[in-house]
Image (tube, rainbow, N blue to C red):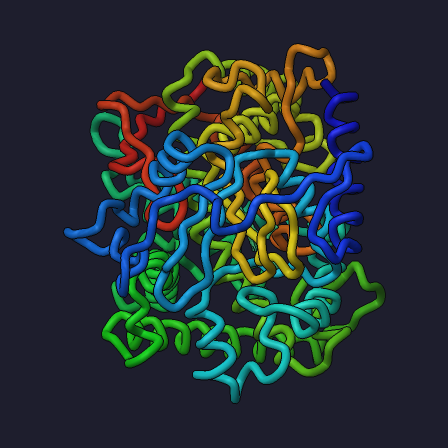
Length: 518
Ligand code: HEM
């Protein structure tokens, strides 16, 4: 299998080079000339005159529900096969769904130095038009492309991804998480269950973590006496609103491009609020830094490191904004999903508990990177949740050159979608895909546990890969280690269905029963 894949990979790479150098748009495979089929032949739902395909996503008359993007993606695969074109979307390029891990690998590996992830046109409009005064030429990383993206990412990625930075945050994230656990016990009802809106509490934990990382503050979200008009709650609401309305703003008919709709106006107001929060806290961090005696780089927090290397605080403002924008909902929805899976899989939970008891015999001893590194089963469990219930249901790239994909000539500018949620469960790429088997991530290489490396990529791949992945992993690991080491988690209600609001997560009340372990 591995050999076959290597052969097919090298063929793909050869194909690309031959294709690009061929004026006749033909491929040469093993001395045979193969002409790719035209793009117009790619299967998919047919657009209708004037309304294109956008109508299919309209409420009531449309055939697809936007909150069911996950099902839509599976439906396309079943109906049309490994390559599916959704064309005729008003105000945006075609979407091309690719359900082939080798082809996905080919695109990622050939994406060049400035990969273009076709996301968030409304954020692009906000950054590049509405608030150009603030963002200027370098708008951060999210919704920014080409050289401006590269320049900004190069400035910030080293400190964010360095293990020594992440190591510094084990203790602060553990402190936030201890407060979260105390809060869980406080809000438990007489049946020892969490309240119906427990997902809100998880959001607060996520925000408290991201505030600590990107703004250098404890925002106080886990305060038991949080006021309704407090800053923390306002940020949570703003983040939820921004992220949950993006799919609607971007995939349904984009009226907001032509006139300021209510949704758009509220979106802009929300974003302005984020900018204001980031500026205020970074300015305070800068003041603190001015009065701090620094002997070594390792004494600096992430924010201070950025401020020390980029004296214009705008870099830190924009980075903080991006981290907050994508670092709350992603992680909190992932945690909702992981906790739900743990609660409905008692045997697996016991395995995780046994591992934790072995690595942390005293449940009160502080966590360290070394101890977290030994939590093999815990990490495998998280990977398996991501494979079967990928929080981010898909990733994508805008083709920057004409490319041959699955035998079709695809012109540059097309937005290719990698439906991770579907490819992660295709038997062609993963053995026993419908079985939940964390061990498959531990036993890799035994021959029976095939996992194509590009079938399940929860954090994306390459130069544009998730910038917060090390923090995301750390936050999830610390939360699970602390929670499962001390408590048993159960879910004694009807099973929940998964849905996409913006992320893919269980839809319903997460009323977990939480009981102390001896
Ligand atoms: C489990 C939680 C998370 C998941 C599943 C996730 C997933 C992703 C994915 C799939 C991408 C696109 C990567 C690509 O195009 O190849 C991405 C980008 C990004 N993520 Fe995450 N993410 C998570 C948590 C976070 C957190 C906590 C932060 C912030 C601390 C963060 C910050 C970012 C940023 C800034 C980008 C844009 C990178 C760029 O375009 O250069 N993510 N994430």
